[in-house]
Amino acid sequence: MKSPKRLIDLNSDLGESFGSWKMGDDSTMLSLVTSANIACGGHASDPDNMFKTISMARDRGVIVGAHPGYPDLLGFGRRRIPYSPTEIQRFCIAQIGALIAIGTLAHAQVRYVKPHGALGNLAADDRAVAEAIADGVAALGGLAILAISGTELESVARARGMEVYSEIFADRSYTSRGRLVPRDHPEAMITDPQKAVNRLLHFFDSGAMPTIEGTQVRLQADSICIHGDSPHAVAMGQRLKKALSEAGIAFAPFVAASTVH
Image (cartoon, rainbow, N blue to C red):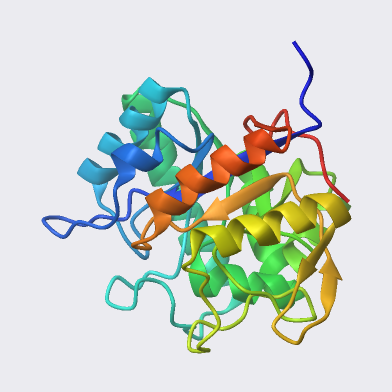
């Protein structure tokens, strides 16, 4: 059998239900992705939902990562709150530690950390916050970092010799700086699955991502993210997997994926 041209991870932000409030189709998404970023009580989730999501991921052979965010259930972690870097480090470690403990109960290992929402965007540009998160994750030992490509968090973690993987987004638009377009912008979200597919096929051919300014920005990719809370998530995941597979790209957890430059 012919070997694939490339390997890539497909991840999604999952486990974001809370109590009786349901968010996303985690069961179907876990049949599509190879890595799951699981909310750990900050922006979303609770112990029962953490356990259920980790257990589903375990049963499907999906790699589990912690998805800490601002402790802001009302704002879903998408509001920037003025915490100091030290405070951010502590609430991140508390959330990651909670998921690790639930994972132990579910007989599943938490393998990596990916900051959520506004926190992830802040860590992309604020070096002090990136350092606080990286140092906190390093203190826990044995966890990789999944960082938005071309950001301070990616750079800081690499400088510390940590295991770091670079992420691009299927359903978010980019600026010419390689940053995600803010969600209040009308072009922030990509909802058309075919548009997302075409953009990613272009990226894999060229290593450059189209931006809303009409330019292109070069990024690295070990993993592609589809937001699990989006109504289009399942359709986009299905279309994306089919199209990329037909283009000779295979899916595997990013711990085994090659990097595209």
